[in-house]
Length: 394
Image (cartoon, rainbow, N blue to C red; front, side, top):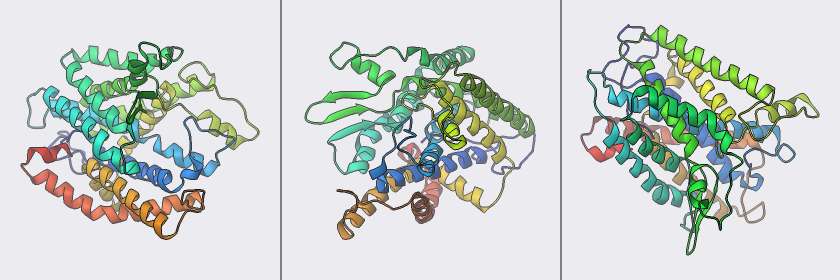
């Protein structure tokens, strides 16, 4: 779901010229990890929908196991958007040297993602088009379109804009519009959620795009960390410093309920509930604290993955090298599987079929990603070897 990027294939390579004519292994591994976590959340949404989880999550209605299962998925969207910005910088500064403008590719790829969202991906959720949900792929697409224009600005201006959006958009939270007011549709798309069209079918803006535009801009500004002139150890130190900086700032802002979250935390009846309340951040739109937690964690993982080399990392790298393929494939596998189970076993929770325990969500996810590993690997090899331009969009 992001641009292809190039650099060293070995996560542990320590050569000063860190960029060669192959993909960045650590970035693909990072994408692969969030693909797996995303699959867990989508299995939950398909087979555990009788206990749907809102964001922020209601501590009075959510078990710790379900809470933390949902929490793992919070890493996905910010990481994808951030890495998309980073990959855009790498696209503009190819390993062979020189520079090129990423504007055209970003614009076309963004439009492609929006089209895929409202057609192929929307149908995969419910098997109909009664409601078109503008979700994460839409947000990434719109962010890429915005970046396609903003990359024409000086590098430091892009950073300032990204920083201002991510750190400042929480100040906009008091602004709201009713559906009958002028400005409601635009504001629902930019900062709030809501139904923006209600006729023969409905359109719901589920992922407000303004904060995600800020995240992709900051990702673009982080691209030079993977420049050819940056040694691996230097990059790792910078990634760790930035990651710890994000988490440190989060502890201060959240610990004293200073800024960055619309819902202050409180001491609960026990330690576990207090921890759950402390990390229960708003995702729609993503609050500053939500971004600090997820991007801070992602930066630390990126640094760690540069030193890791084993079969599990290899598998994650495969998933991360063809993220759009496995994203679409797993959604349709889940849709068809659920329909088959519902038709053969029947409902056991009202009109729904539901699993009994949260651990079963994780078990089914393992089976799902195992079944999709070889198709994903085959497509990744085809994608990276073919000259057909349209395939690159996947």
